[in-house]
Image (cartoon, rainbow, N blue to C red; front, side, top):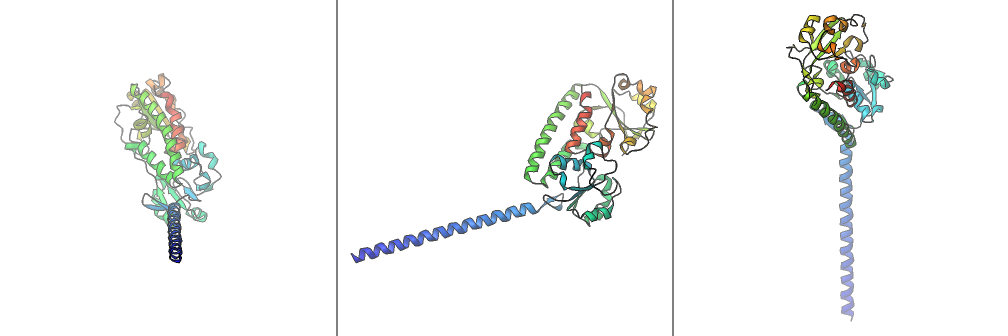
Length: 322
């Protein structure tokens, strides 16, 4: 009898020991897993590599010279992170950001003002690309560039990359908004595919006219929205190729998309007012058929490439795709 009880006691002790061993092992495993998960989350929340530059995730203070980036940040719900931008001559649609700290002009940054803000991130623009090295001494700096040969795909890539700085939910939101834009763009491009109208993009600048081709700042019109360019051979340059009234009449476009640079930068537009009233311009197919389209100049010249600006640019021209 004693032998039986002794054996039962030993078995019970073995069972308890085994149970405790398994429990400890499980707790240790869970602790290790939780620790690993926390470490992973901490790592994700700390920083991300953007175009080869390490930047903080969810930056609290951003200075941006790229206005398309500013409107995208706002569209994603993070406008409070924008602490500085060039506030002079902000496009009307960005007037809600005019209370931010001014950090210079679109071309000439105020480095002292930027430094005083102690930003977590600086986003340069094409106009301030020469200052990137100086920006980097203040904070991590990135530049989003667009490819005129593949405009819309490059813009979408820029937007989703920017969104990744604000986390996975921001990326999902950006992709949803891009899908809405994609749908509108597809409708306009389909309408233009059926059209035989030829379009000419023109910049007015202090009393002068210049025309621009498909691989210029107007790539969105041509390569994305599908407006057909005229047959004119145009030398691509920053502000376009100068043209006379006679030259416009000879090209004879069905649509003329007009960007008034003087108006966009707050200059004296008195010399521009009569340009489109010239009889030769009015005698074109565009002039005869209400095809002269005045674009929202500050939007098209100073901004673009953002979620908000793209929608507004679509709204500017969608009624002419038919």
